[in-house]
Image 1 (spheres, each protein chain N blue to C red):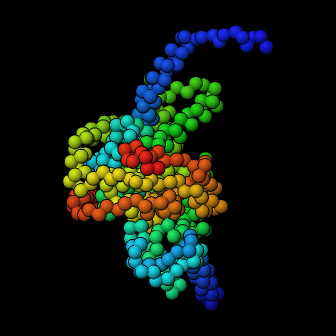
Image 2: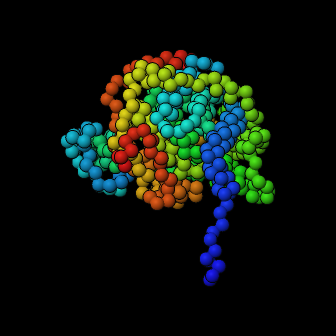
Image 3: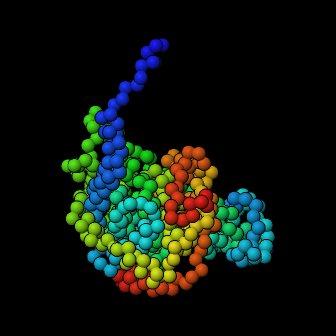
Length: 199
Length: 264
């Protein structure tokens, strides 16, 4: 009786430690660089403190491209690029690292669409006709955009492939080329309709 | 050394054949992409059928076609909603994009839906799946010592369908997922949508339980949501303009369709 109670307690403590460990890793977010912490999510807001690069940070919420953060005693807003959101090691990395490039893990999903379903499934060619019948005219699309208050935006600056690869390469064998380096990574084809002279 | 003095021989027929081949290639490539795409979506729709609501299908086609109209790709774009609880979206060569009702239910706005569709449109314009199938096809042909014959007249639909099933079960290289994010977020911005909605989608995916079987295929075929957010931040997403105009009209039509059709 006493032994089983002890075993139960030990198990609880052990699980608690595991949960705490992964919980800590998952929330181990840090700043990318020295950054000012602002009172509001706008560039002109008052500076309430300065965070040091690589310092631990807790993200409270996001608004647009701003993050509300707590870093030690300082609370405020920083640009999203100032924080490294993905923890270096953690449950996420373990989950996504499960697949090698050649191995298919046929996990089963609920009703639906798992790798196993795809590999063992059948084809429905007739359904393509239903898809084809859904095609729209340019005028219908233009009207939809207008009704939704959507006007074409001319981009004056295009995004660039970041120079450094995403961080947790060491934990995921298939992540090495992800994001690419400046000279080996894929280059996005710029949408041609917007500002070809802006790059 | 004197042999170099001989004038080069001219091959008029060969030149003509090359010129004709170059002129014919784009048409061949488009037909082939369409064939590969048809086999791919037929397989996916054989596993998860199209949703029965015509209104919902039309709405998703409108959002997707608007995004696609901002590309310079000469594709016939077709968008569809799959009736399944799985949380995922698929692109296929030739201009096919499919999104599951399970993922649609997670969307909080038309702008978030636009972000998902723009990511898939980018996969198509960059030929991510088509190139992967071509590589697979060439490897198989080399191994068998046969000439690759898929995509030609009388293409082996069953073989293509099987090859696409393997590709969709395994997923693309992770680098192509980052690239689709990068291009997709720019496309949706050009179309007038709020690019920060792309981050909202990634936050939702991140917030869903990783042990959730509805998420299994998406998680195994994509980098983690947080890594994708970091990538976009480093690529300079915060320099994209967030529209000042009200999204009220979009909210109304989004709620009418998604809340009434999908969430009962």
